[in-house]
Image (cartoon, rainbow, N blue to C red):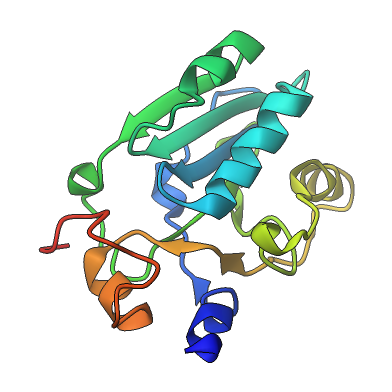
Length: 173
């Protein structure tokens, strides 16, 4: 059972680059988080503390409705909410939190995690470092997405004893 708890932080998930909504003429950071994920809560806490980056379009896409949404608005962030049912793509391997970065031309150049480890484990959130690297050299290593599964099907595979996930997402997903 101990390996099950540890394993949750070793499994890497997939991103959905199609969730990015670039704003023409500006670099865009889309932070994709979920209301029921502790790693997502760490990312939201970090974003509330630092506020939106100047000269960059930043948006937080929330799967569900986190209590911090008011704080994000007060800090000046744009937010969008989606329910898992609203996602048209295959979400069977989707996990949160993840970061999407698009260029001023609208090309998605980054779809990955925030660091080399789970942010829940104390790993730094490197969103701005990733952005600056892309703006400078145009390249960056993609970090894996460590966090929480979005689909109930994947939650059942990752957590067959329902120790971490307890009916947070509808069973048919």
